[in-house]
Image (cartoon, rainbow, N blue to C red; front, side, top):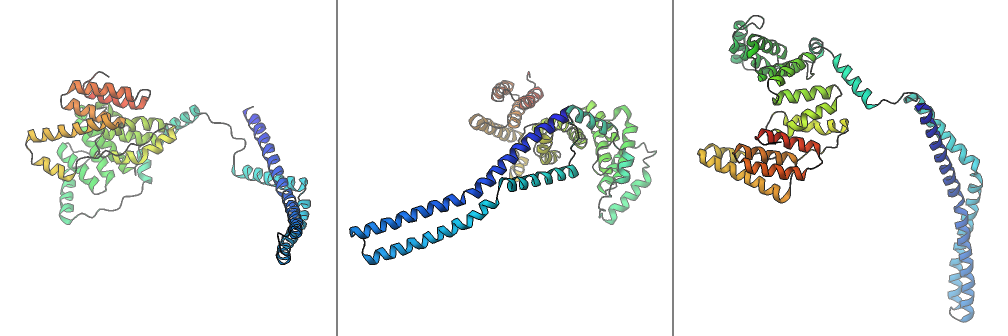
Length: 406
């Protein structure tokens, strides 16, 4: 039934468009002749006026002759234009115009039947999400992804490093080793060399040996090794590691980033945005996941149907600031931090800013122990961003982290 109404409405629109085109073609052809006829009448009137001016003595005989010669030339040109337009107007009958429009419509229909899907039904968003979930549930395993992944470009380590790696590999067997320090070194250095499968095996063994003592960082590192070994693909095995990491620490930045990446790869852009938006707002500019999120989040929001404009990147301290801070006493560093917080607070009060900037100010005031000021800033921010649920959620998370009531 939906298909029937679609084609009914489409046919009606096509008929209206065709009628409009035929009318335009006919009017364009008929407009040339009346214009030329009007020009001829104007020139005849000018000739008569020249004769009257000669009779009144306004023009001399020589002047009248020049004027009448020029008018006669223009009159002949208008006559030729009228004679040329008449056959064109006669040839463009309504049947000719209609045939041209019908031929164009038939061509468009044939083209659509070949490259389009004329009988494909509508696909509601709920079905699309269900299809995406089904595709994620049946996506390829880690082993399949590693088999199909392109190998990374070979590293070029020096001979001494390679010699040390040979000794480390001989001393630490990922299948049986129980030395946590050795497994950690092996995993990290294999990853440095681009041997991600070996790094993944060593990190998996480290997590296994640690057992209940494994941390969120251990699991997020394992997920990263799995993803690197699979060429950037987040497999079901990597997802399990991410789930463990977030169960141990829901604020683990790397696990949150890779979880969002997994949903983006699976077509669940709504869930990817739900991971990335608060993570981006809460993260310092130098966090390793900030740059990749900023490069993708606008497209993810667009595909999720969420209006979102990426805020300007927050500027961090310069190299000179960091060098100066390194030589400061604790009191001087505290004073510098308070000055930077005051500058941010003054700018937001005078000019406003993004929700991410307000969230950073709330967190900074909470860190400095200024709970009353942080609460006042939070209350003002809630007023400024009233009705914007995503921004309010980011502000609420910052308030909770600062020890305020959400």
